[in-house]
Amino acid sequence: MVEYSFNRKRDGLVFASMKDINASFKDLCAVCDAIRYKSAHGALSTLDSVASGMPILYRRHNAHMGARHEIGGRTGRYPKKCAAIVRKVLVNAMANAENKGDDPHSMYIVHATANKTMILQRTAPKGVLWLGHSMGRRSARRADVEFARVELALGYGEEEGLSSRMKAAITKEKKRFKEMPAQKVKEVKPAKQKKQKAEAKQEAQKAKA
Image (cartoon, rainbow, N blue to C red; front, side):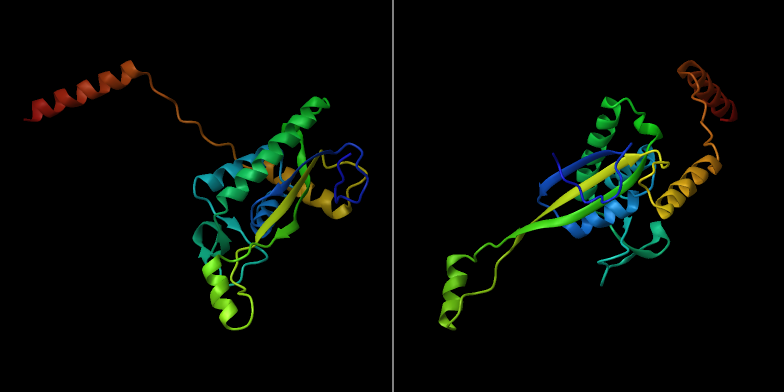
């Protein structure tokens, strides 16, 4: 059985995880913060927008990071790799919810976290080691490989295991989604009508000439 860091009642929640991820856990944490308490459908839209050039807000680990005008001048970055990884975990969670008979598009992300699991130290190349040996010690120039783990949980926001803060955040998200104005859909004109309009424009230009 897979162990999760969610230490509350799990009745009614659907989990998914991915481990041994060769990616920055700091970027994964920022992506998880960006989608936490959002609807599953809205989280997918947020993650897809990162691939098209939309930055993610960094609340932590943002020292010497630039401000992005897309998020109101706050610090952010474009973690495309980590957004794609979290998206895979979210799709797996939605598939697990479907297999259990739930409607994933009506569920919300009640738990999203990323943790560092292990670090593999790489030794420096031979030439670098020899330079370090001349000073009586091994060279510390090496690139460590960090591995991380991502966990997600979906729920309807009314489960007993959720805290009052979690329920309040999900209720706020539901209210914001209901008050969101409906987007106007542009009517697609038939190709024949467009052709007639272009011909009329050409005739008008010929008449003027």
